[in-house]
Amino acid sequence: MIIRPATGSDASAVAALWNVMITQTLFTFTSQPKTGAEVEALIAGRAGQFWVADAEGVAGFITYGAFRSGVGYRDAVEHSIVLDAAAQGAGAGRALMQTACDAAVAQGRRVMVAAISGANPGAVGFHAALGFDHVGRMPRIGQKNGQQLDLILMQKMLTPR
Image 1: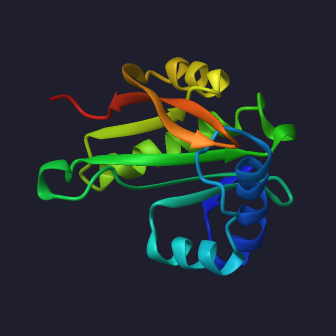
Image 2: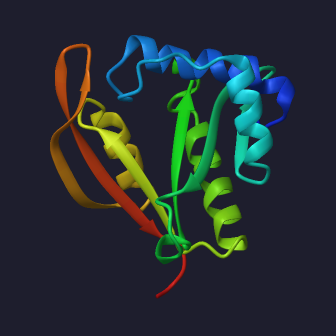
C-alpha cells in the first residue's frame, strides 16, 4: 500500500468510500451522499491537503482544511479520514495520518483537530493511540436518522508552543 496525493481520477473511489460512511453509519452527521464531481472539486481545492491509501485501488483517504474561519484559527486544521473496512488495522490509517500531520507542519500549522461522532468509539481509540488528546464533548449536538449524537473533540499539537 502506498500513500500518495489524491488526484481527480480518485474522486469516484473516494466518493464511494465516503458514501458508505455517510449512508450506513452514524460516524458523520452528514446525510447527503457526495458526488464524484463534488469530491473532484474538493481534491482540486485542497492540493497538498488530500491523500489516498492506494492498494491497487483506493483503500482510504485523508484530507484537512481550516478548523474555523478567521485569522485567529489560521494555525489549526481539522481532518477527515475514511478507510475501507478491509484496510482497517493494517496501518493505512496511521500512514495517512502521519502524512497529513507532516504536511500540516510543513505548511505552518500547529494543531490538528478531530471532530468525532460519539457513535464512533473506534475513531476515538485510533486518535488517542496517535497522540490526540480528548479536549471536549458536546452532548447531543448532532442529529442523524432520528438520533441525537455527541461530538467528541480531540486535538494533537503538531509543533511545540
